[in-house]
Length: 477
Image 1 (cartoon, rainbow, N blue to C red):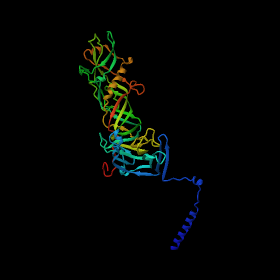
Image 2 (spheres, rainbow, N blue to C red):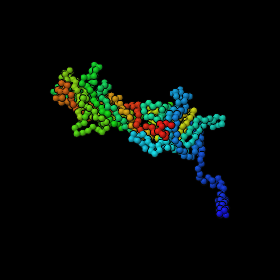
Image 3 (tube, helix red, strand yellow):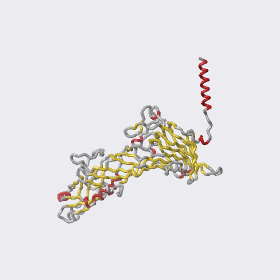
Image 4 (cartoon, rainbow, N blue to C red):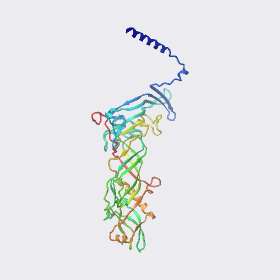
């Protein structure tokens, strides 16, 4: 047995010797034709417009990481305090894990199996880079450095509670990130239209009577001598489900506490202003069927007989009346502390410190790192389908809606015809009842019109519930 083992070792040694002898030296020309990959890669580049040289050392590796950071505070005080007191970066309860596998009914991330804490984010080709100012040993100085990665795949969460005025999450942000275009929906709060002086409407009526001045302009009158006009109750606007489209938005700046997203568009095909016609239903977007039965407007116009007789009437909407094609331009002002879930789907990102404005190589044109600490994500962040938790008050839009309604009703083709008997009935406070379908699309269009403007502030988003990154049911660990 020992002889066989010794023979095998001798045979293997001879074969190894043969392979070793097979190695041949290569000259520079031959070596240049050989491909290989190093663990460490050093890149040098220059940007004459900035007067900077960049030296980037990257690691050709895939790192996996699951981490919880109780408090991340960078750049507190310093020269940026003259701009805004505080920290460049101030984030509490920050977690990085693998991406979620599923979502709940509201779109918040969920994890199956052993949970989020058992997952890891993937970080591809991490690097450190220096920006050097000057070209001689006597004048060279470090203008800044950054830590980053070519790709990051994982779920970044900020804070623990998805509520109003959270005390954790992003308290201060300095940097650059893009929010991808997305869709969403909101539930509007039921309200009354026409009950303020800013919501007066005008229109033209044609009165079929054997008297002069058959055509008259009426004006609603919600108040008389500082008091609500007797019998004037306004028009009910029901609670509705409204869809909107949020455009891609860049959030960038120093020590930001909130993000402003403008240009959000929402078009409402039909808002019922009265009950549905017999045999029909209100639109599916109406959340709760309101009671329209007591709705009416007090309107004034030149007298039917002289100046003082028949100079006012009550007006009611008949079933089937509606406000159609209302276009809104919404501005969303959201505290960054209320944005909790940031999925990173392979985007590049970095954290840098610089003593001057630096445009780091390979970043977006608008991504110019300012003095101090700077956090950046290259690709748009997909926030998912956005749903507001609370009802949205649209009463601020109503004066603009009144203007659009007036523009519609004053057009000659939209003249309201009042019969002889309706005119006589108005003399004894009998309401004039008409079915009106008021199309304000042309007056609120995005091209050539004036969309109704609405600003929403700090709305709780249902898909921002934070999944724990701990074992044992702890919120943060």
